[in-house]
Image 1 (cartoon, rainbow, N blue to C red):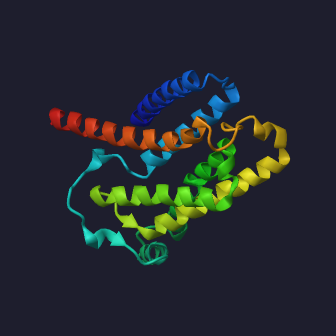
Image 2 (cartoon, one colour):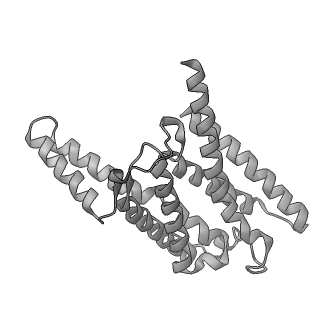
Image 3 (cartoon, rainbow, N blue to C red):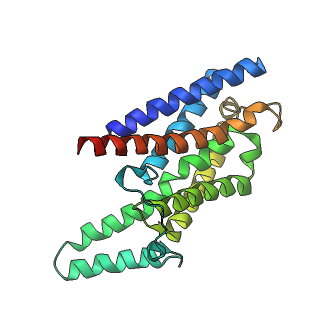
Length: 229
C-alpha cells in the first residue's frame, strides 16, 4: 500500500507539471473539471499498472519463458474453475471460497479496466467512438501482457479478453453518464476546439507516465531490497 501511495504521488505530480506546461504553451484556460478528469484518469492507470504486476520489484528476467504463455482463449478461466471444484472435492478448501476466488479474479480483471473505457471518451471527443476506445484499451492490456513476458507473472490471453471487456463496460457506463448528465459531461472535455488541439495528447501521457514511472520505481525498489539483503 505504501508503494502504491508513493507511486500515485510521484505520477500525479509529474502529470500536473506536464499539464501546467501544456497550459503555458496553449495559453488557454484549463478548468478544475479538466484537471479533475486528468487526475482521476492518472490515478486509475496507476492502479491498473500496479495491480497487474508491471513493476519488476518481485522478479525480472531477460529471457522469455514460452511455457508460461497461454494463447488459448478461455482455457485459463476454465482451468481455474475446474481447479476450484477439484480442490473443494479433495477437502482442501470449501467450494464456496474457491469459486468466490475464481469469480473475484475474473470480475476483477474486467472491472479493473472499466475506468479506462470511461475516462478516454470523457476527456476526448475522438474517443467517443466505441472502436477507438476499445482499441486503445486492448493495446494497453497487450502492453501489460507483453511486459509480463519479462516478469514473474504469466502472460495469459484470457486477461487480454477480460480487460478488453472491462473497457467496453467502462464505455457503456460513459454512454449512460453522458445521456443522464449531458451538460455536466461536457465540462471534462479537453479538446473542445477539435482533435488538433495539443490537449488531444494528454490521455496518452496519462497512460505513458504511470507505465514508465511504475517500472522505474519498481527497479529502484528492487535495488533497495538487494542492498538490504
